[in-house]
Image: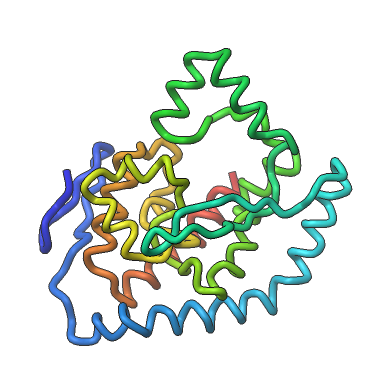
Length: 231
C-alpha cells in the first residue's frame, strides 16, 4: 500500500519503518537547493579519488573480451528528459540480442523479467561482471551522471521508458526527481524486492526528502555493499 503523509509503509517481509515524518523548516531548503549542492560536492570529490580505480577496472573489462568497457543505456530522468546512464559493462557485448532470444525461448524467464525487469541467474553476465555487480563497482561511472545533473546521489533508480507505466498514477513522483545512484530499496539488502515494492519505496521517499534521510540511505548502501561483498 502507498501511505499518506505521517503514516507507515509496511512491507510483506515484515519490515516496518516510519518513512514519513513531519517536515522540518530546513527540509524545503535542502530539497530545492541543498541536495544538488551535496550531489556536486560529493560526486566531484568521489571522482577525483576513484578515477584511478575506474581506469583499472575499465582496462580489465577491455582485456577480458576486447569490448567497450563503458555501457551507455537510455533512461528516463527528471521531468521525463532522457539521458545516457553510464555503467561499467558487466554483460556480454550482444546482451540485448541474447535477452530477446532467451525471453522468446523461455516462458519462465519472460515471466521473471516482466515481474522485476531482471533475471536472478542472468546468463549474459560475464565472470568479471559478476564481481562488478557483487561489489557495485559497475555503478561508479554514474558519479559523472550525478555531477552533470542527470542523476542524484539518492533517488529512485533510473528506469527505461517502458517501465514508467509500472508507476501508474505515481509516475509524477518518479518524474519529479533526479534518478539516484542509490535509493531506499537498495538499502534493504534483499534481492527479492518486487517491482511494486520498489515503486512504493520510491513514492514514499519522494514525498519527504530530507538531508538526514539521504545520509541514512547513503550509509546503509555502503553497509549493504560490504555485507554483500563479504558473502
